[in-house]
Length: 84
Image (cartoon, rainbow, N blue to C red; front, side, top):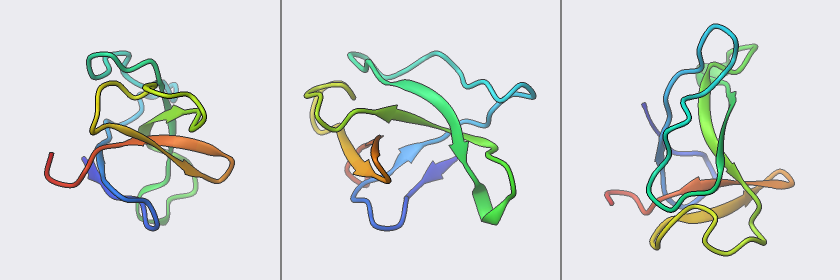
């Protein structure tokens, strides 16, 4: 699913979490961030989709530019410019 988080520039593809709340391990080339089951879609009570969680202080953690670790709520999410 293509996801845009309100307040963050860019977007990202978000696969669903499996029944054990695990996320796929495949990530974009050069990305060192790990997928975590953290997204509530449409106001759900529990997370059902994955995002690449990163440390905004670590350069290049999301892979090659234009990928970027955007800070949100004390952590970061890898995003990509809309349409890229």
